[in-house]
Image 1 (cartoon, one colour):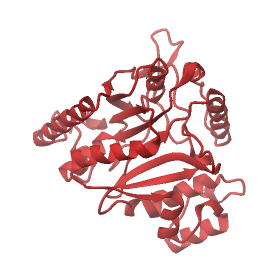
Image 2: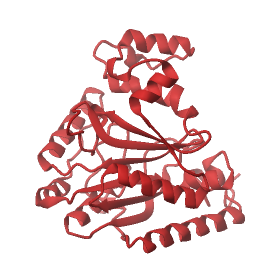
Image 3: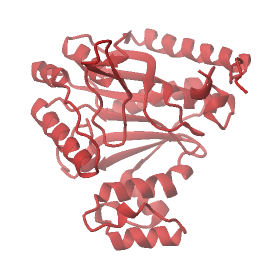
Image 4: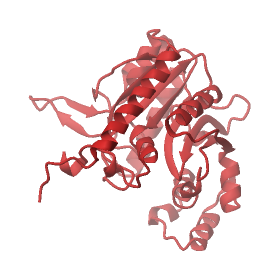
Length: 321
């Protein structure tokens, strides 16, 4: 039976409003400007693991995409000399709803001009403590977390070692992860998501740093260690809360990455997507040295409210909207 009532209690809805107030107060005190950017874009994200919702205009000619993140538009503002900025907005990802996922969700994204990702981690730690009273965070490298949890070096993973780990944990990976031409990063993502992430940050938040350069996405490569990306992820209570970068400012390199991502999509039977030429032009004009992060607000609210499912903190989940 259809229900008109909200999923979340009124107490949770009040807590949501309170946390949003504290976030805006936090950035106001730090002179970070709040901005708004479009929810509909002419360009989708090209990330292999993020699928955009698409719609046609009334003439059925032009395709528009609901954003998976406001990142591309916010970088265009940064290139126009906005200074440090933040945004609280809705984002959309075309995936099934689940315990920790809803196709429509709230994101906090901000960029700090003149900062690197290490400085941004410190500010993120401060904000999270303000919202969740969780104290200081630990920091571990990508390599350290694999060695500690699985006793393997992620930078020398072989399919044989991958299969051994799956057998050890009595897990059956997707068959495409066992093929000869498999992308090692896909195997690493499976191991991370299945056997490591649920154990991260159980006592206090944990930043994972120094990801493989092959997982750089929109991050810079380490200047002295070309196999590492200047990227981090944040976990607490086994939940991934955020993904941050020392932002790539090289238009040529970003264009090459977009082309490579489209090639990977094609190899996996996905459609190639239009590349955001406006973002590339903004990078050509000049993106200031900056670091940025996106945090999943609904997951933070889950933790603040002591809830275990996303639907408990949303006014109306996907199937009740």
